[in-house]
Image (tube, rainbow, N blue to C red):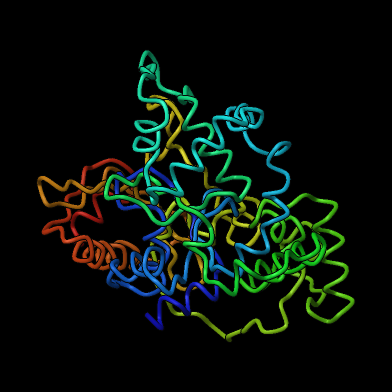
Length: 372
């Protein structure tokens, strides 16, 4: 758990996503940094006391330390303006909101389905199409979650959010702490972002928590004036950069990691291109016929460069890690296939899959199959 906590302290958040073709999104960044760790540690961190992680809107839906949850109260206060339209629709339904809260007070933590069954048992869900056709209770729950009146006590095995009262989830010292001034909170978030990045442009730093540009720029200037950010120039960056004072600058890096599509290292695509010369797009929501590299593509970081990418899927019934496609960058070293093969074996063991199976698609696939 000390190692898990160390990663959390360093990167500041773990993005959550419902896609489970390989593994849950929030599990993968720790594998990239720690190797085959026990995923039960994250379950403990996010669902058991004392909680080390709680859920809220950070980069997107994310796990953050409880102290960071407090820095996001200004976003909760803006729910009526900033929440999705489907969520804002519940803002004026006072009676429904109070009914939902009463049920959570009485029986929480509860899933949306459980709250709906108790509060609106006669509602018939519209399943005519996929999309944001939420029932009224679901919209009410999401509004209450966005505005901070409810929070998440964890997730079910089906990855459904369990709604509960903040005072029953957050550590008392966090729940009872005064709400920070918005400018102080945003400065705190920028500092977390800077620590995670090491060095980054203003756009990098504000994108980490999806911060408004004006307020983020003011926070950067304030932190720089206090010596908590240092101005820097980075070769290849299109603009000025900012360095966190505690950043390490090793003479060289020897490492190997597969980076999930929602890994914090690759949140900001422009940074990825300027720092590594690597063009990357998530193609999950791209129609299959238009995908270039695949559905769930993980870049391969080898030492100081991103040298390839691989489209992966867990075949849980067949107990195999499926390589749907494998691609190599022009500057990749000769041992790229061997290094990728070793990392895939490590991942398969971590996911409790017996084999690694390669489909011959992509310019690295044949070499990878031979290496395996």
